[in-house]
Image (cartoon, rainbow, N blue to C red; front, side, top):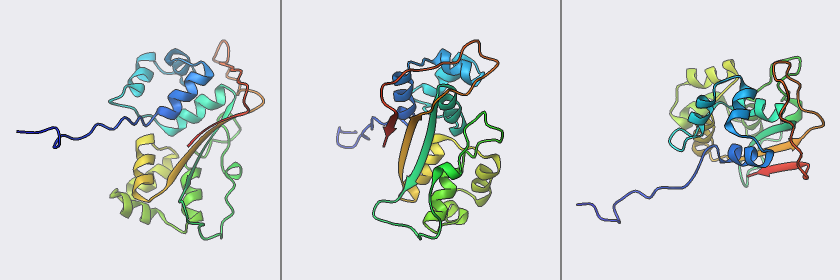
Length: 191
């Protein structure tokens, strides 16, 4: 017989909470997000369900860009300065979707690895994933939010998400109107 002491404690943690908070602040609903990503509303609702609670990082970049925000994701290690060999400036590595070149979605991990003198092999060993899986994230230039959290937890990284207001949303000729938002603050930051 199981007692209350033996039962696992359900942790109230949502992987996409930062995105849900941003959608709330920006006044977006699943219909708006589906329109931005050119996918179906049921697909977006599926991602946002508590038992799924996952999506691709590239989608977060697109949602932010089309609503007039820049999304940044940084991995840091508390109390560890890194090697100092590579200056870390995320703006040098990330381009917003809609610019001439494809965005570097995996820049956040490239920067963290360089800063702390780590390799893809170190990530594979820490997470228990194969080196091929880690290499695939970089070659496809995309990764799921759940994998980011797995890497962060396995390698003792802290995650910092931020949405910063940019001057104009990225225009999309396929949308009848862009989802422009007006927010008093210049930046919305989640830790």
